[in-house]
Length: 135
Image (cartoon, rainbow, N blue to C red; front, side, top):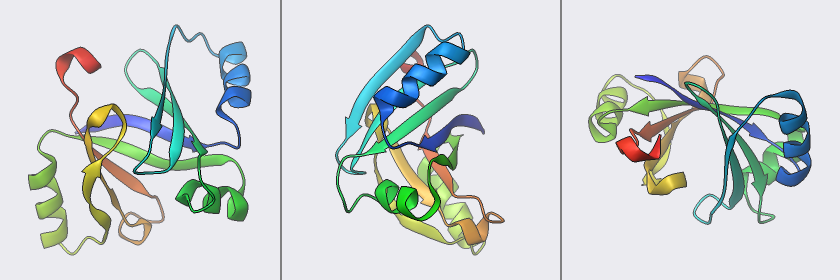
């Protein structure tokens, strides 16, 4: 397993990108809407990981709730799972609390979340390992 990305909740992807592009040298940025999560994301590709900026696209988006309660900032850390089904089964068998089932996230990859109470207060996402050409 490795860190896949760090996700940051923002009010506006386009406004946040101005700061990130000004401060960091980023050559590759993908923008995508993920309807199942009700977010618009910008994926900033760094040398060996990514930063994901997340903007809510609906009032009932979990990101909208996060922004209302806490403001902009780090939302979760994502870990690449080579075999997400097995990794989730192992986590559940060890007593880990999950949030929802495995579902489709950005790039069409399978994702799910570990409840922060199981990870010392940090919301953690498991992401299916991307196909070689999607890195």
